[in-house]
Each structure stands twice: as C-alpha cells, then as structure tokens.
Length: 126
Length: 153
Image (cartoon, rainbow over all chains, first blue to last red; front, side, top):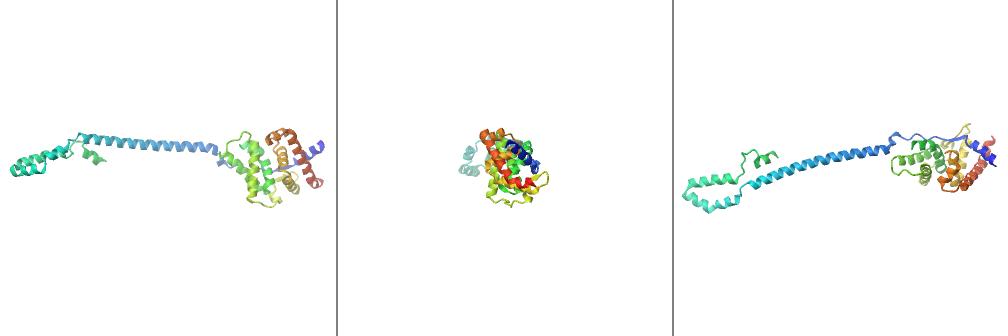
C-alpha cells in the first residue's frame, strides 16, 4: 500500500499547477500608505501654521486699534459742551468765539490722521 | 509576502480551481487574496499559509456563488500541466480533485503542490497528524482510481 502511494505520488508530481501571473508592482501599498500619511501630515501642519500666523497678525492689529481707540479723548463731554443751545447763543453773541470753539471741537472729536500710527492710516492699510 | 506567493501561488491556484473550475478565475481569486494582504485591508496573520488557504477557499466559494466566470471545465481552463504533455490527464486530475471532499482536497494540494509535510498540513488544518494522514491517504486512493485510465496509456 505504501509503495503504491509512493508510486502514485511520483505520478502526481508530474503535474504542475500553472504559476500565477506576478503580483503588480504598484501593490506595495504597505509601503505607500505611510508615505501618503506623512505627506498629508506635512500639508496639514503647513496649512495650520499659515492660518495661525494670519490669525495672530489680525489679533495684533485689532489690539492696536483698540488701544488707539481707548487713547482717544472721550468725545461725549465735548459733544455735551457743544450742545445746540450753547452754540446758538455763542453764534448770536460772539461768532469769533464760536469759530474757535468749533475748531477746538473738531481737533478733539475727529481722529488725528497726521500721525504715522493714526487710526485712519492703520485702517487705510488694511 | 512575495516569497509566500512564489512558494504557494501555484498550489493555491490549483486549490481555487477545484471550486471555480475556470483557471483564469482561480488565478484572480488568488490575486485578490494577496492584494488584500498587501494593501493592509487585513492584518498580517500569524500563520500566513493557513490564512491564505482559508482566504482562497472563501473567495473561491464567493466567486462560485456569484457565478463569476463559471466556465465549463475544458483544456483551455485547466490549471494543471502534465510534464509529458498529457492534457487530458491534467484535466482529469483537476476534475478528480474537484470531486474530492474539501478537507481531502486541501490535504493533498498542501502536501503535493505546496510541499508541506503531513505534520504541517495537520497544524495548518487544525487537526491531529493521524487525521491529516488519513485525509491524505483517502485522497490519494480516490485520485488513483480516477486517474487510472490515463496512467495505463
């Protein structure tokens, strides 16, 4: 029986199954995936950094504008002083003083655009 | 992975061809299994040979169920080649293998064309050495009977 098996095994070994076609080279996906992942991470980091920098620049500008706005004199008191009644009386009695008062008010109420870091210039830059 | 493919690819094609009959479809099944392994769709198994045999069997059964290239078994679709050029015997072998019970078919393909020892066949199939040896012997017996007409020529 054993010799029969051996003989038959020898016969079977005369048959060879066809060799399958080679695996495609592009299938080295186990090595391609980490590369893709690294590239995606690099792009994400670059984008994130750019956005962060843009955001921090905007914040700086906003803070500066806010600081300048705070530094400006409170215009409400001036506005109170230059009330319509007082101005009317002044116009009737002393037009020269009215002109002086209006000039003074305009200087303190409107932003000073002559300075290099004036609010108007900062806004104009943006 | 490629070494596994080189060593067991032909045997796996032969194994798959006992389910799907069409040689090209059998080859596709084996390809599909290895592509999945390479593309990390599945984790690398601890015992790759056992895994690929299981995976090829399942993929071949799925292909058969879906009627994928369920071509009739003819010399064009035969995955075996006889060294002496006996194409009929090669076809006869493929047909005889297909008629074997699945576990016997697996044992004989693993032993004969994957070059595994009976101990390895037993370990991969998860059975005792005696069971593996019996399956193999029964398989040889049936194959011998069916291939007798070709051997006489």
